Amino acid sequence: MRQAANDDADGHGPKRNLEYLGEYYAGSTVADYDRKREGRGSWQAEQRALDDFLGIIALPPGSAVLDVPVGTGRFLETYARLGFGVTGIDISTDMVSTTRKRGAAIGLKDAVFELGDASRLRLADKSMDLAVSVRFLNHLELDTIRTVIAELARVSRHFLILHARVALVQDGDFGSGTALNAARRGAEQLAALAARLFKKKKVADRAATIHAAADLYGVFERAGLRVLKDVSVNRRAHLGFEARMYLLAVDPAR
Image 1: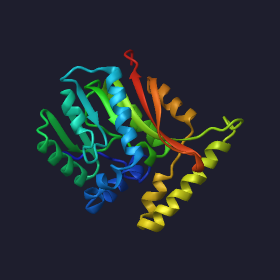
Image 2: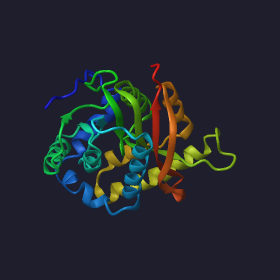
Image 3: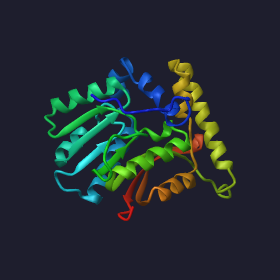
Image 4: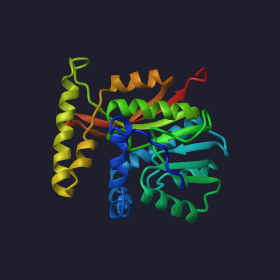
């Protein structure tokens, strides 16, 4: 198992955003992760969106897929059914261990699971056909999102599938900041509730990071990505934000 390099010694930049995730996703949090979520509508909507996107791009068996963070390996059965070669990376030791066991249990071939940092991938340029990242960007500040998406675009030859939380735009709000501020207030309320219930205020605060859709599209464009399709997978209208999944094509000229 290899540890991805991270020389951000001053505590700023991507390390500040990512290192706490490896500490939080450990022990019982990992053991109970799927059980606490798999019955939710958003969890099922994410699987439907992934299946839909994979049907659209129709990658052939043997295609190389990167899943980061791979988490508990919730999509491994899907990858195995389609005959993909899988590389899974996660910053959590317990998540990587769980995924390795899951892959072995389903007989997944040509799979590699490693400890690593999504902002500093130890992969060659254009070494993957598809990069998948679900339930991750919502933990990150915009600068780190730029870094992570640029890395995913660097290593993928063809496509990305991403998941992010965005502010809902109301009539007259676009560009004014009103919708974004309202969404962030709603997310802060949700985070405060999570902190009281689970005593995990540090993680809850990180999960409260909400971004404007226009900002995300700007990140996509800068990374040479074109949106082919996007769908809502968890709309929280009363809180002013929603989770969306995006299918993106990589500009072959980059």
